[in-house]
Length: 122
Image (cartoon, rainbow, N blue to C red; front, side):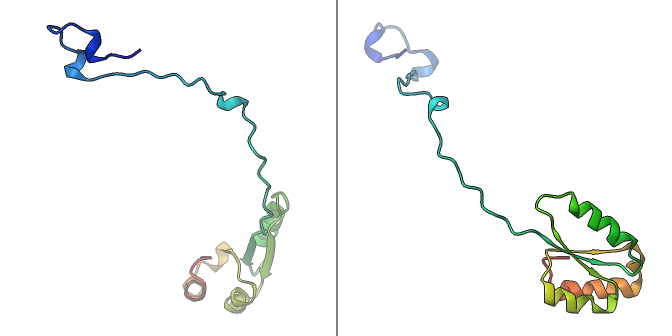
């Protein structure tokens, strides 16, 4: 439907203050019928998770949860918190998880050191 100045009488005003409305229909193929090219799935490298845990219970739970993920992340265990900075440099993890026992003043200082070395993973 098109509203033109020619289609109305001289004394009539176009609707909506002189605006012209044009409705156009596309006779082309519908988008749903078009075949989209299949996208190839890129292989994503698994995440590397560094777990700091002296007792082993926290890291055990993390390993069990990691086995259920697809793709399974690489879990690196650090049972001596004094070695965490060296392990972060060596492994370049995506995530650093720290057990609740390490939430002490000294543990938080170590975590701050890790953050200075690799701010993206903490």
